[in-house]
Length: 276
Length: 276
Image (cartoon, rainbow over all chains, first blue to last red; front, side, top):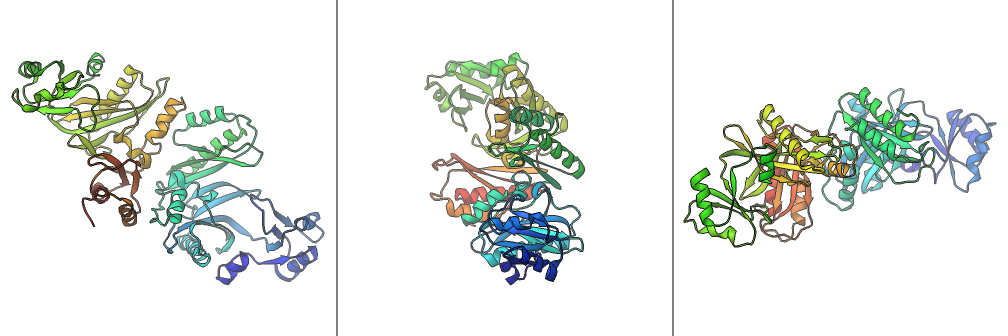
């Protein structure tokens, strides 16, 4: 994926395929310095399959090479935040672009999405959407493409990940946009005209519900619905495992601080971190 | 239903159960004058089971008595328009009220709904919601109750129909409200806390698609989606029969005239009344 992005002229973190810890050290010495990010090129998700290695003597440095999968070494990007640009593209090349969002990560897992990304300059938002559209065109994507990017402290965009499917960073569109990512994915796949990707409200906040301390979440579900009639709660019907995404909550309106407070409270309550 | 509304103090058109054409004439002479509206008290919908009779010699006057069903005679209300107040009520009596809408009727069929009802004075909107809440309380309704009313030219509300189910006059909430009538019906039936009934936009217009001249609507479906990315098209999967409700379209925004034009155009195109 990194190689293909390079071919089509889309910036991503500096990187090299490495075969062993010595190759990691060489990459650090010759290109990016320490620390180095190591990723297995298959099977990773939600922070799994990713290691940050501080030096050649870091005990983690051998870990990625235990699986029989190629390993990618990358620079650790000094980023201000992560953004996600999501588009839907038809077989004929028509596409619609959702507002660019901020994706808040913790331990490699997306915990919160704010649509649109606060204080993102219009020019950078446009650039992010154009990157997604160019990538979709070059890769001939049909349906949803989510492009996760680093916004660097010096105002550049570096592509971190591509996901060719309805994506967590666009779950806010189910309740918050005229046409959800799922509807626009189906419209694209069925080669129907695409629907308007505009948001209903000034701000939409989505907070993931991670598996936590509540074995039986139904009472908590009633509680958060009763507390906040504007809140939309989505359960995925998965068994609960610590850290696993088991659902999300969404809320829309005009006061971002207020919305973030309400969504975070509901997600924390559903997880069992708080009791009131 | 009329008797029960009278008991609980909710105004509806003057009425009497009648056994034959002579009783219709007596009701006209003693109470409301001509014309008289006749309804079979069961089995009516979309204008079926309703007759407007101009005099005792009107050839229609015997028709309602052919079925073995009681017949209701009513005054023909000189109304400015029809309104609908839709609420959802929980087993414990909690309820939420959707914005009061205008329901445009043609030949006894609801053809268009505008949410909220344009130029409806706030006091009258509140009164309409209170009528629906009182009726739901008196009848111990759980789930959606739609109350269809006449707004008379002298500014009174007369209840025409009650429907204890998700209702055509609230289909606009699927796309146009924070919580749809279907979600709030399920929340009520499941005794979950009810969701916010507020509209996303200043105006939402829903136009019913009636069965018409298109045997194969898929090409028309593509056409209207392509023409208007904000339009939401709902098909019910019914076989097409002239005049039958086979779907609806919804659109939301700030310019009511523009929205009505777009929704009516799409519905007429889907029906086959127009070709461009």
